[in-house]
Amino acid sequence: MPNWTHHIQRILELMKRYPGVIALGGFISGVGSFILVDRQQGLATWIAVIMLVSWVWLMLENTLTQLFTRVFKREIPQPLLRYATQMIHQESLFFVLPFFFITTAWNSGQLAFTGLLGAAALVSITDPLYYKWLAPRRWLFLALHTLTLFAVLLTALPIILHLTTSQSFKLALGIAMLLSFPSLASIFPIRSLRSGLAVLSITLAIGGTGWLLRSWVPPATLWITEEAISTQLQDRTPGDSLEDISVAQVRSNGLYAYTAINAPRGLDERIYHVWQFNGKELDRIALDIHGGRKEGYRAWSHKQNFPGDPVGRWQVRVLTEDGQVIGVLRFNVTGTDQAAPAQGEAK
Image 1 (tube, helix red, strand yellow):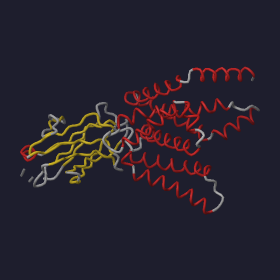
Image 2 (cartoon, one colour; image 1 turned 90 degrees about the vertical axis):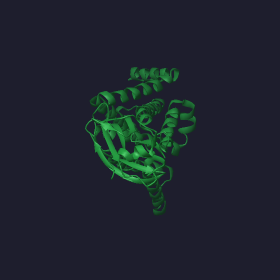
Image 3 (tube, one colour; image 1 turned 120 degrees about the vertical axis):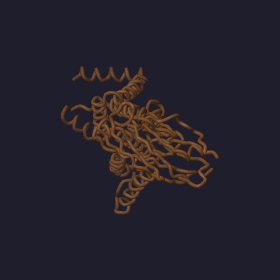
Image 4 (cartoon, helix red, strand yellow; image 1 turned 45 degrees about the vertical axis):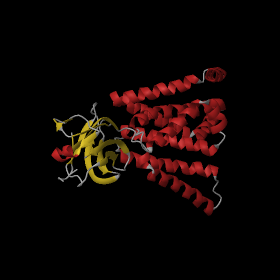
């Protein structure tokens, strides 16, 4: 047992001497995880499982350390626990960041969510911020904890359980709400029915806010690999992508909105092409995609029915069933003149 204590002390000294190694390890594992998900989904599943198991340890840390003390008659050194917690935060955040960075629509509210994850990752690798600013503020520490777990679940559930983005979001939000309740109860002790209802109300408010702002959360495992607005589509391949289109072109053959979407192998997902004109929705076309194709699953909608005067700003928003934005295709119609309903297809 003395040898065991000596080895632990040596590890702690090395951690203090080279604090950047943990951060670098988290970053490398995160990028490596993303590459594996893109190329070898079986291995990615194991990585995601390991990440989730590490979170079980974090949630049961106090219980497990007490059990360890009773069984082995020794306490686990507190510095080791602190570093383990920090490392789990680092590993988790750098595991999910590559997914969210590539799936974020940067010209939308998703910028705020991914930016928040990036800021959390920065805090987790900066010891003065993590230990002197974050850790002493229990409510802030638990908020980081819940946010990180929420992001990990959004990334891992479609890979492990082949849940749709909609199902994953609801389950991840539900788990985050459940975990936030005991966290809030530790900050605001429940001593009466009134205080209990107050904590429950805060928990429900967190869940309600998360649901209302769901369009701000990128669909972590869905991203567009190719997109185009074109007047032609032949052999499932679009013509040149256009940003400025004349009224004559619109009237002659309508327009195709083409997207190739990467999704995890085995995932069946319904998405929508939502055609908007000057900010007003005109058509919502459902498309079913299937995961596993390296180049992305090709899906398109064909709009032929345009307003009497189609001149203006147009966009096709690519959404999940719950309204999360996968991407936005923008174009302008310039010039005037009527034409059959929008159609969609996926291959």
